[in-house]
Amino acid sequence: MKVNEGSWKWVTGEPLTYQNWSQGEPNNLDDEDYTEMYRDGAWNDLPVDRGMYFVCEWDDYPAHLSQILQDRVVFLVIRIGLFVLILGLLIFFRRDSSDCNVFN
Image (tube, rainbow, N blue to C red; front, side, top):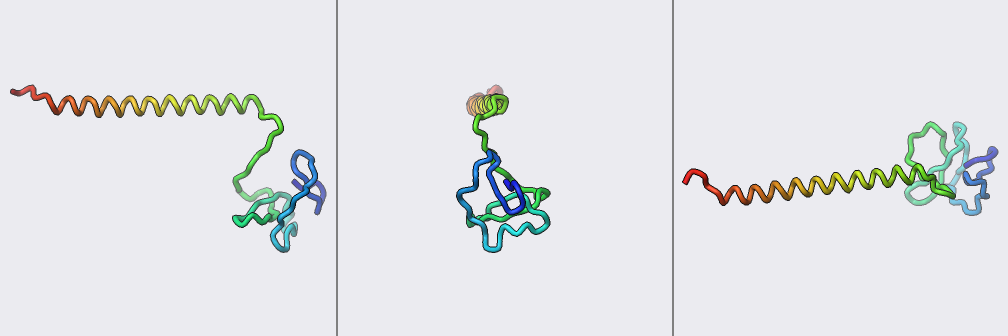
């Protein structure tokens, strides 16, 4: 996170002790106030309107996010369980019905 033009800090306010800027960066082209990392690990400054994925860091994980994550995991486990149950029933009844001939 940039504090003043040319001065970068982490969002926690901690000083930036490690830097890995790509050659010629940061250059503030088009008022670039955010940072991205290239595949090789080098950094580039970029504008806010660039659609990118991001990583967030919290000192204390917010309780409401923890609950949302737990709810989604429970929902996913229930859906997987129902899918396995239905698949098992389909296999069971298909196998049993092939052994039965009601016309003999």
